[in-house]
Length: 554
Image (cartoon, rainbow, N blue to C red; front, side, top):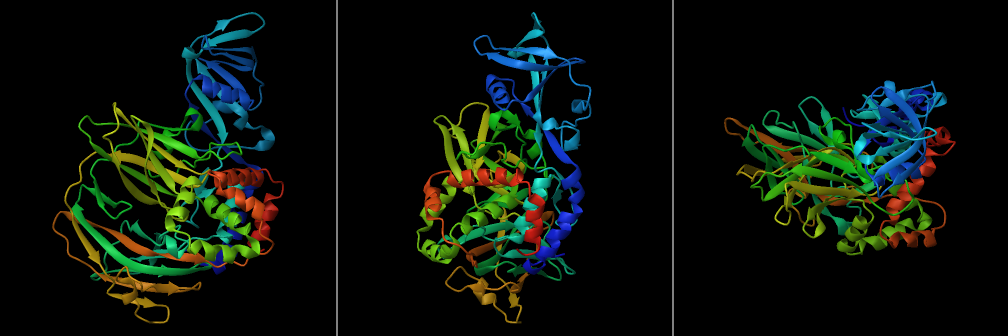
C-alpha cells in the first residue's frame, strides 16, 4: 500500500496523534544504558546530580554526598535507606523500553551501581574501590521508545515529545522522489532517491537496494512519484541486477561497486559518548536503533558511536555494513533552518545552485548532516568516507569498504559521526572476506509511462542532459524493465541506480535573520541549532497545541 501523498498528511498526522494520546498524557518510557565503571562516567553522574543507588547482593542503599578520589581510584559517599515507594529497579527490563507514570515518580534520574565490596566508616560513610564496581546502569529517558504501528510499517513513537515531533515533521516533510516496487497486484514503498541533492550542482548517483523485488511476467515494474512540494529532476533510473550464489549477500557501495558479504560479523562493542554501551541497539535489524541522542549540552560537538570488531589475523580490508536512515527530526530541523531566510529563501536557493558542489558538501560534513565514518589508525582517527542523506521514511542497507592496512592490533575500531539526532542506526556489522566474482546486468527502462500516458523512457535511460521533470505533487511514472534469466542455484538482488536532484518550493514569510544565519558558517553550528531547538521543543508546555495547529495546516 502506498504512503499517502502530501494532501493527506494533515489528516494522517491527526489520526496518529489521537492514537497515541493516552501515551502522551498518561505514560512515559525509560531505557537502561550500561556505562563503564571509570572516573569520567562518575564525574558526569555527579554533574547531572543523578540519584545514585548502590547494590551489593540483595542489599540496596541510596548513596549521597558523593566524592571521587581519582588518585586512590575510590568512590566515597554516605548511605541512607531507600524510600519504600516505586522501587523501579525490581521490575526494570535491561533491554528495550520500560514504562512509567511521571506523576508516580521519575526513574530517569536514577543511576544504579553494582559493587562486590566496600569499606564502612563512621556516620554511614562508605568507600568503594572503582575496581569493585562490576556494573553501572543509567536509567535514561527513552525518546525513541516504540510500539507497533500499522500506519507506517515501522515502530510508532511512544515517548510523548517524539510523537509530536513525528506529527509536525510529517506535515513539513521535505525529501526526494519516492520509489515504489510492484509485485503484480500492488505497490510497496521502497525508499527515496538521491537524498540531499537539493541543488543542480549537487546532482548525484544513488544506489538503492530493492530487497525482495522480483520480476512478474518477465518484467520488473516500479513507480517514481513526486508527493511533496518540490520540483524533481531525474536524469537516470537504471536497474542493476546482481546474480550471485544463494549463500552470499551483496550490496552496492557509494560508487556503485559490488561488495560481496558472505559472513558479516557483529561488533564486540558499540560505545556512545560517556562510555554508554549501545551494543544491543545495533546487533540486529529490529527497528531498535541508536539515535545519536546522548549529547545534552547546547554546544557544537557532533554525536558519535564507536564500533569495535575482532579482526581476523589475515584480514587486509573490511566492509562496514549498516542498516540505517535519517531521522524525522533532521527533516524537521532543516526546515526550521530554512525558515530563518524568510522572504529571501528563494534568492538564497538560487545563489546556492551556483556554489561549487565541493563547498556545499564540505559545509554539510562540518555540520554532521551526512553520516561520516572514521577508522582508528596508527595516527589516530582518520576519515574514511561518508554515507549520503537518504531520507527518514525507510531504512536501507549500506556498505563501505575500509582499508585496514594502517590499523594495528586485534580490534578494528570504527567511529560513526553525525549531528545530534540526525541519523538512526538499526544494525552494524563488518565483513572481512575478499570480494568474489558475480554477474552484473544494467537494465534500461523498456517503458516509462507518466501520469499523462506519455512514454518518457528515453529521459531515464542514460546519464546525460535529458531529465524527467516532475514539478508538481501527483506527478508519477511507471517504469518497466525486461528481466534477465538466472543460473541454477543462484539468486538475483536488484538495485535502483538513479541520478538527479530536486528543488524545494517554499513561500516563507518574514524578514531574513541575517545575523543569526551568518553564525551557521561555523563548524558544528547546525548541530548546536538542533540541540537547542530539540530541548526547547521537549520542554515546551504547549506541545499538544503545537501538534494540533500543525495538523490543521497552520
